Length: 107
Image (cartoon, rainbow, N blue to C red; front, side, top):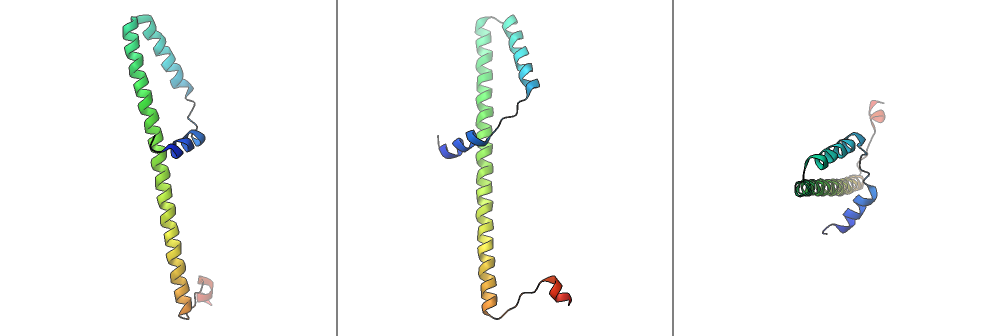
């Protein structure tokens, strides 16, 4: 897999919701299919369900990785901003500028 470390983090930190109502509905529908369909049709329906489950899992992992990448980029941007701000402040202080807070300006 391309993002092995991020996938490992996903596996470690992601806690899927329990969704007891949805799970019970799946079980009830599965039992109804067993009662109504012959084996070849049941197998086909189960293959469809398995494929949809893989799509949902892959989408969840992709969403986690995308969110992580966004957080990483925001962190880098904030770090760059703080560095630029620090350099500007040092340069201004080197030129003899004085920074005041709002309280000092009112006095």
